[in-house]
Length: 433
Image (cartoon, rainbow, N blue to C red; front, side, top):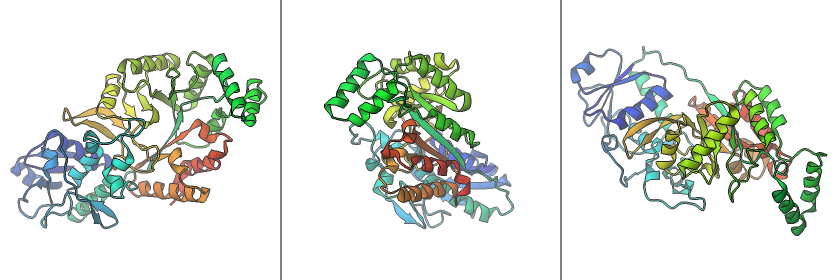
């Protein structure tokens, strides 16, 4: 156990120390403000305050973990070995930066509470982030800092046996539209045919007709392929189904279609499943509640796993809504168009509500790779190298790699050519350096 001596025990302090020490490094942690208890402790110990007591392991604390609310914090990001750091400490500190305050800033998504420019979908943009502006979005800096902290603990307490952590993989299959042509209903089907004719897209018209006549498989019906891939690995996929009503942004088929309900149930027989909240529902708790109830009825089980359409997370309300709905795991935290670490970590963490200054029970599984972000890389070789580099950065800190692919990514659409092989790299990742 690591005992942390500090001048004041705050919710922020306990939250971030638990993430770094307990969740990333696997070491239990406790806190004290009593110097006598700290001196008497024979195990791992650290003083986290303004001045060291004597020659103990010491990191000079930044004020961030002892404040309440949020303000425009001045941050100066500096190079630190092969990574970066901010919140400079002092000469007597055993680390040059207060990694705990810096980690809190990132995983609490402090910057997303501050005024910022939203994109066309009303989302926080990667380009607004500290990580993007300072070129460390592609590094799980919180986990890297944690291992730097582990190294100084090891030097100071060489007899301590550190628990070993393991690299994990969670492949997400996002299903915003189960079928491209099937089960769309008469009006949508006729509209699609007329649109194909208007745009002279006779290739799609031909495919549409053959699918309707059951001569060919629907382009987006890749679930048999995914089932076979699931059978070939011990890694459990997580499918997230959109069941919301048709709108400008949400274009799945109706949950009233028996074939769609059967699909969800059958996928649930061999993989984990969860709910993808529709774009139209995200800011409306009653609609979210309705979608969750419908999904529960279809699956005949309680749904506690979710993701928001278009990766839209407006803090803090988006996560408060999930808490209200008893959702336990969220897979929305990430950037659609950029690979990397939106919260600076590749270890799942709990949502901290900065308004109320509390750690909540909602566990955030940030994703690091979206198939759309990989499209930016033109050649399959570039995509492969980029993916392997990302995986390696997470393996180096024994983190959890979470990817988001869609059911249509496995279709014969030329846009997604080679993506099945990329997905197989993720599944076989333990064989990669």
